[in-house]
Length: 408
Image (tube, rainbow, N blue to C red; front, side, top):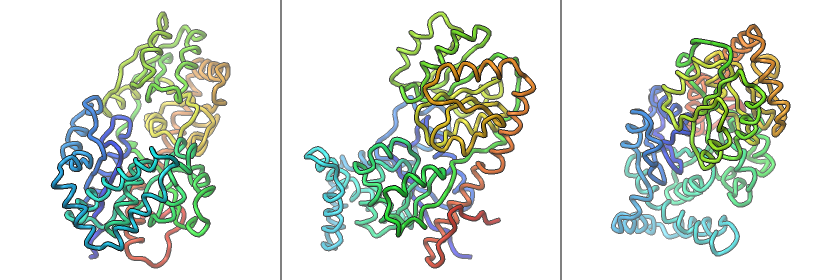
């Protein structure tokens, strides 16, 4: 049997409480037999270590910036790559050529080049065959440069939406052109990348969903009046509209799980309302909260395909969310939940009121949502699709289909 490619995963911060889907993906690939080295540019803060899974992953993760702070490690790494001056200078030119405009942009890309040299040495020392990046911003620049220095192929998963707000700044065209392949979390994300990636690479842009384990989520106590929000407390999530809706839904109770820069302002806005703020919670705590809620609400203004919606649907909870980006690929309006226009507080309130008043509709939507997730968004299947891509591109030959096959 041919050995599976040894992988490294790189993000800006790993593990993070808000990016548990990456942890699930890494764990699923390991279960399939891949060795996966986890790498992070920065060490995550204690607020993200909300459970034993996060603490264990942090302990086994290579932290690039910390390694760069050791002068001997940094100098040895770059002297190593200077032995091939042509490749070294080519990678340095790539860093300069893809830098954002201005002195600040040039300076940052040179820093990323320094980091890439140390990362590339770590990958070579650990026998890594392929480097994969999530969140195609600065850490993906480091991945691209590490690949250029070491010759190790790289790929990345593109989520959106914010990466598409500044595509030239992050040079997603060049990243896609140089990548072995790109995993796009939705048809929408793929189409947006196609706006910038050269047409010659479109066949290497594949659909691989973020995934969950549906068996981790199940039905619990349903009282009929409990709402749940899980997410980062930042402007993009639209929580102020949800709090305004609560003023018109006196019978409802809202639990807010998550943290972020807007928490204090949101807590002030929620004074006098039936709202609880719980901060970051572990994956087990989120699963427990989903078992004991009636409606999940995510009134975001911009998203990719939120994993927390998949979790809610797997728990048999109807969802109320916004008709944006790839969300309609997951949530069917009127079947598994309600889709409302982003920023429309009246429509959000009306959708919540309708579901609060109709237990039978909530139950039917919950069942439909669980069916959808079990069919198209399980971590086992999506990790198998990624594994197929890693193996196919390592071997060369026929390019896999847009939605990679799942091998038994």
